[in-house]
Every structure is written in C-alpha cells, then in structure tokens.
Length: 244
Image (cartoon, rainbow, N blue to C red; front, side, top):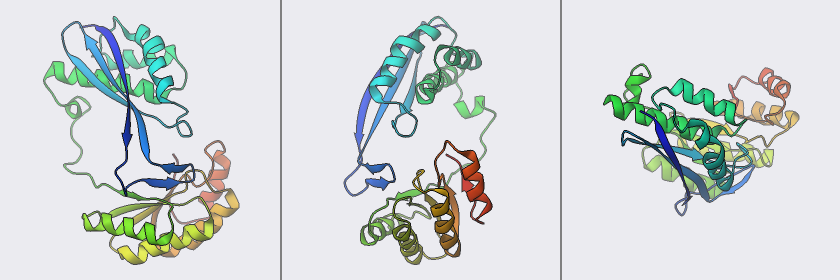
C-alpha cells in the first residue's frame, strides 16, 4: 500500500455561546483546525487533525495547510502508511517544528493502518489501558460571577474535574480559584493553568496562596523558554507542576 495524496481541509470551529474561555493569551472564542485526509492506492483513506494556536505551537491554519501541501505531502507520497515509524522519520527530515501538522499525518497513517488490519488503533498501540477516562472542563479567567456560573454549569452536567485559568492579575486569580473551590466542594478536583502568564516571583506568591485550596496541579505557570525558572517555581510549592 502506498500514499497517493494528502488533502488538508481548514475549518474554523466556533465555541458554543457561554462556553468560551479566557486565558493569559486572550479570549478563546473559536478554534482554527486543519483536518487532513490521506489517500492510498488501496482505496483506504485515513483522517487526521491539527489543532493550531500561533502563541502556543507557533502554527496557523494557512501555514499548516501550506506545510502539509507543499512540504509534507512530497515527503510521504509513495511511502507505506502502515510503516508509521518510517512516516515519522520522513516528516522529521522534511520540516523542523510544525508538530501539529506532522501529528495530523501520523494520526491519519495510524487510522489507515487500523482500517487495513481491521483493528482499532489502540490494539495496534499495545492494547487498551482503561475503559473510561475522566474529563476536565475549563473555567476561564473571568470575573468571579461569570467564572462560578460557568463552573456551576459544568458541575450540573456531572463534571468532577475542573481547570481554572489563572496567569493574569494574581490577586484576582487567587480569588477566582477560591470561589470555584467553595462552590465545587472538596470532592471535585481542581487544577490551574497560567498559560505562561506569571513570572517566577508571582508564580511563587500565587501558588503559596493556592496550596490551601487543594489544587491538583499547576500547568505552565511561567514561560516555556526557561526551564530553570520552572524548576525554581517547582521547588517553592507543594503543588505538582505540569510542564506544557
């Protein structure tokens, strides 16, 4: 089996009214994705997806389409999509960075391999690890009335895991998390995500205050380009740090 063509399909997915979010990167009201179809000479078509955010991965929808069409397609057309290790090697040689564009191709190749074998991809990756997985919902960095209203909406759905956005004004961040904790009670897990919005001193201050609120994790409290800063924050808090 050989890959014959790649078809990138840019789409823009608006978030539902009332479910937009706000982070240190700004307000998130829609999601620019690129869907990808990978065609083969066996008639099997694989589907992949690239989720894109310029301030996060450095990729845009038009840029992703161009990379898939002009750089990655020539690198993999003619290759066997079932040999995913070879596909990944070809992608890495063809372009530096662009992780989500490359992931879309690899995802589609796994889809093809599973369809060709008549097996779900989890079987091909070594078997299912669990039957269910908990899902968290995100409470944006809004004022307290809006943040708690959104948290209550999620709790009413039966959600038991929340992530509260912080990384703006640290005093307001702390109060937002405190309000959500008081609303949710002790049995709901709550993590926080600063989206790189704090500096080291602010992160230490914020996390010290959050320790009493039983915070499960703190995602990327400082910028991603300084691992020593992240290590300094980690050493100053008992809250587990999640590197993004």
